[in-house]
Length: 419
Image (cartoon, rainbow, N blue to C red; front, side):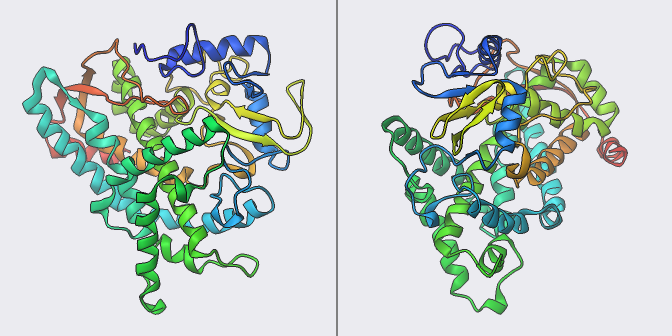
């Protein structure tokens, strides 16, 4: 397992998932809402009941870190508070609603099949050295999906990762000094790129605009208001950031977990209908965003602890998803788990609007993988190469050896029909 931890002993800031889970378990043993270790004055909601209630109570807990005192026009959806949040969310819902994003599902299926075939071609040459599933399959899909959704050039999509990680570093620097920073100021590269795409669209006569998410952002009206290009830029930047690493990491986690349990993978191939269950279990046990930061707007009791206005609270999704009081044997990855009430996408009226799209991306990837890969194993099953960001969870690399491929295209087609 990875040795990349912060400080001594179990800590929620560990990047190894089992070390982090152990730290959260110790915190839950002391209460549902407790001081966050190492962060003076910050509370951590760690029980399922406290995180669920905190996320649902949007009038009492709202906003995000580093967004205080910003103009409303510069705030992304996560930073907005009610009632403004609800209005912007209705616009975003119209942009990425399932009936809209379903239109890219055939594209995702074709892309996933192409990526898996490319991975298999390299695997045949690599032998025991294996290939990196994360780099070959998990990483390209989310930004490509975003590019297709917004009508941006797909060839540019892999650059998103560098830009959003630049953004993440600037947010961390701002948080460390207690300063606020707008998402548009967090990455000059991504901000300039998105603004250029908006300007290109506005330069074309409106009756020539394609029916994509960027057009819907520009024309959707709620309560007599459309978003300004400046605010649309903030929302798109946030969606690219929130929808890339999280989906990538969950796909990597799923292949890692199944690599540790060959019997579970064999069962998944026998019964492709379990792919959705496997995705939900990966989201639960390895929540890609381990916490969300909220500010208490009005006093409220959470799991027996009074939280006062102005208090910063980390809603620790990673802890809630492994709470023994909610999930039986929570540290086990199980395909037969029927309770899917995890909080990986949040809870209540502010649940992630891109959840449907993320699930669609992961379903396409897993169907393509299971159709072509009969069995595989992890190159180093005892080593977890974690992404180096405390807030996120997932493997940076997942090196696998393909033990057996589907004999021919007919077997893959049969598996696809069964799904």
